Image 1 (spheres, helix red, strand yellow):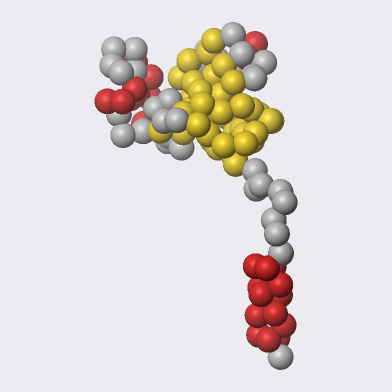
Image 2: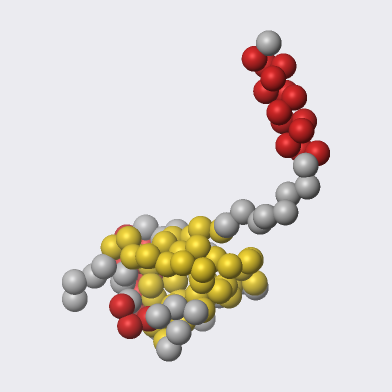
Length: 114
């Protein structure tokens, strides 16, 4: 009986028009801070960030297998290079390396002390 209820629920949900887009949540390390924009390396671990932070100054972003996103609409005065952030994106991420996205909400996960 439970499986029948679950199956019926799935069928009803699949037939219902979805009017709301799910939010895209991304995490990454800040690699560059400009006016109202943060350039982040998406889903980097700490070791990848440490290796990349100096290398990125000398090479084009396309040379790396990492995903970079330029987050626009950020009050950047509270962020610096090396901070780890989590952001909710308005709409979709456009383009690649770096992709571009408008920030709906952003919060720090890790703040560098220096």
